[in-house]
Image 1 (cartoon, one colour):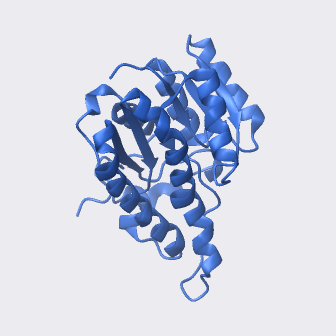
Image 2 (cartoon, one colour):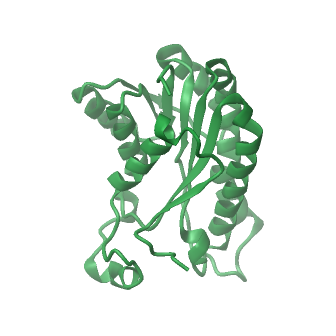
Length: 248
C-alpha cells in the first residue's frame, strides 16, 4: 500500500498513542497527533517525530464530540492529506464499579470512547479513504474482555461492542479497500498507571507464559503492521498482544 495520505492517532499526547504515533512516523506516515488537553505532551510527540526526520502536526479535539471530530479531520486533510490510517486509541477514566452499583451512566461513559468516538472518526475519515481507494482502521482494544475483571462490567461491555463494530465495518467497508481490525493489548503500564512495582505486577505475571510485562513499543509495532501493506488481506480480526496471558 502506497502511503498517499496521513495517519491519525487519537489520544496521542502520551501513553500508547504517543508510541504508536512515533512508530507510524518511522514508517513514513505523516502523523496527526490528536490530544484533548495535554498540549505540551502532544508537542513533545511532534518534536520527537520531527527530530527523527518524520512529519507530524498536533490537533486538539474532543473525539467524543459530534462537531469537533469532522472539524478536526478536515484540518488534518488540509495539512497532511486524507486520513488513510485511523487509529482509535483515545480513552477516558476506567473506574472499577461493583455490579450492584453500576449505572447506565457508567456504561455511557465507556461507550463514548469505544463506540461513539470510533463511529464519528470513521464517518469523518471515510470519504477520504474512498477517494484513495484504500484505508486502515485500527481500534485499540483490551484483553480485559476475556479476563472479565470484576468491577469492570461497563468497560468490558464497551470493549465487546468495539469488537462488534470492527467486524461489521470490515464487511461493509472492504469493497472500498478498507481494512478494519482491533489490536488488543494486555496490561501495558503507561503514565496513567503511575508507578507500577514488582509487587503490583507479580500476580499478573504468574499467568503470562512469556514471563514479563509487555511494552508500549510492542503494541505500536503490531499497530504499524496492521496499518501496513503487509496486512492488506487481514480484516475483521482482533490481534491480542499480551504474551499469551489469555490462552484458553
